[in-house]
Length: 150
Image (cartoon, rainbow, N blue to C red):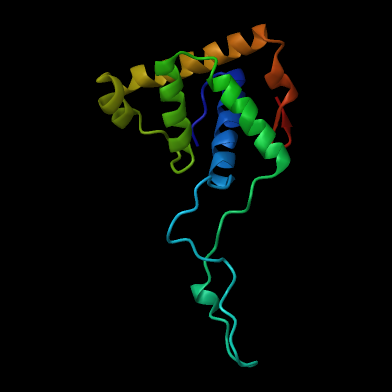
C-alpha cells in the first residue's frame, strides 16, 4: 500500500482513504433500476436449498463515526484549490483498489507530466491540507484512523 514518506502526510493520506471507503458504503440517493433485494430466495418447501452460491454479497452500511470522519475528510479536501482537489480525489479513490496509485496514468491524463511530478504534486497537496488544517485549530488531531491516534 502506498504511503507518503512523511509520517504526518501518511496519517492524512490514510484518513482520506478511510473517507473514500466510507463514501463507497454510503447509500445512493437515486436507486438504480436493476436493484434487487439482498435476501436469498425463500423456497416454498421446507427441505430445499436456499441457493447460497447465488446470494449477492453487499458492502455493509457506514456507521455514524465513519460518516462523521467522511465529512471531515471532505472539509479537508475542500481547503485545496480546484486542481489539487481533483488530483487528491483521483489518487485516494485509486488507492481503494490498487496498492500503488497509477502515477503514470494520472500524469498522462491530467497534466501531461512525468509520474514523479504527479506524486510530488499530490504530496504537496497533502502538505497544504496539513498547513491549512493546523491553522484551523488542528481538527485532524482529534480524528482517529482505525484505532491509531493521529
